[in-house]
Image 1: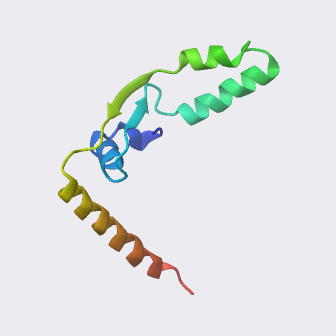
Image 2: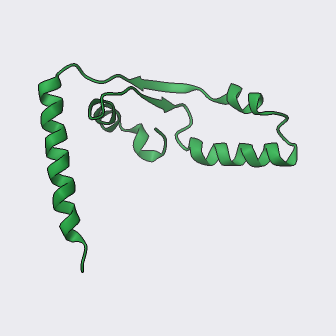
Length: 92
């Protein structure tokens, strides 16, 4: 996960719990923009190869899915209901 919201530990744990997969937070929160800049540098020859780009990436945190499957199932159900309700917001 990257972007400003990735700085929120609670949100990152939620993101790991709901689908049941680990979430890794990079050291540079705006890694999408950094990656685009690095690829541009690769394209014009400022960066020599993709291995140089990969060597710069570092993880800052890792969030493992929780073990409380009953609670997580409840969260998934609440999320599904919220998504369904939000579909009615669109004006027709």
